[in-house]
Amino acid sequence: MPKKIKIKAAVDIKRIFKTGLHSVGGVDGLYLSVKKSGTKSWILRVMIGGKRRDIGLGGYPTVGLKQARDSAREYHEQIRDGIDPIAKKRDAKALLKKQMTFRQAAELCYNKKANEFRNEKHSRQWISSLEHYAFPVVGDMQVKDVELSHVIDILSPLWSNKTETATRLRQRIEAVLSWATISGYRSGDNPARWGGHLEAIFPKPNKLKNVRHHKALPWQKIGVFMERLRQCEGIAARALEFLILTATRSGEVRNATWPEIDIPGRVWVIPKERMKSEKEHKVPLSQEAIRLLEKLPRFQDSVYVFPSRRTGRPLSDQALSVHLKALNIDAVPHGFRSTFRDWAAESTNFPRDVCEMALSHSIGDKVEAAYRRGSLFEKRRHLMDAWATYCSTIQNEVELGKIYAINKNA
Image (tube, rainbow, N blue to C red; front, side):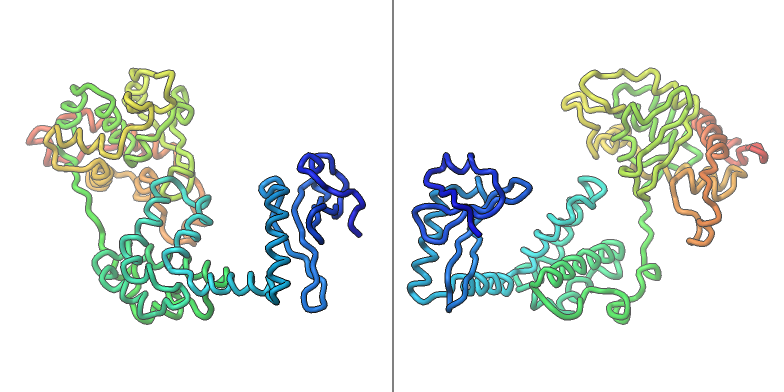
């Protein structure tokens, strides 16, 4: 039963703490509901078609006393005119669901998944791929009307020559349509699902996947290049040198922070949030890498190892690439991982697994990975020490034809 306390003015609301319904003066059937948690909301209790109905008018203080009274009066007028406000509201929601476009569904789905993205770049890619490829085809369509033929139209131009992009795009379209189904905006099968569906139309991605080769410096020329690089000044040059010595990715280096680096222990621990594999990666640091770090300035306004001095934020995506172009080197930062891998394969006796784990690559299939749980850290330390030594070695024409000797027991 409603409480006997009657609310006449806004100031009365702050004095009410007892749970239950409290009558509001000025409009018949208007009450303030107080929960055990202390939250307050407005309820209009009316008779519609001989039945008592409760209509929620919003929470307090978002909806104030005057607004609640005005809304209650409007509902009373509708009832006097023979309109069922609850049915009207339900019909409006149903109409909205029928009018939901794929673009609107994608944006709502994107907002719901915001906490799942590894980083800002991944977040941007998720929605931008839909904007670029899916929206021109189905963006303004009702999400309930998206069919298999539309999905095929979106994916077909990409499947053979941009397989990885197409694969991720398909997954994102499937996610949007699944969200729309669960949310009541569409029904039936998901036309973007792979298993038992699109796999009958498109070839398997791993059969088509084109390997993208990043422009890389030949491993035999790394010594000459490193000598030249070490003569350059600036934070971008040091970041590029550190990238080469650690065989890591540009984003991992640019976003490196001092707390991640243990100089006495000669190890850099990259958190899983910044790894492509979504697994923590421990990078053994050579003496050359340690000497580089020890000479770097530390800025009080930035925690980053390689900050942009203008903003205090990490170096930009283009900083390392621009530096390479300035040196007239036909390579990209990511290509130095290939340089390292080619050197390890052609010039050393280190096992394949050690080399692959140095690059934070997965080892074999799931069964093999289950049995190989270690990180081979000490063996990787020997590998990175050998790489650093080689990077400081300038090869002459005779030496270029020789195999660089590495202790088999390293």
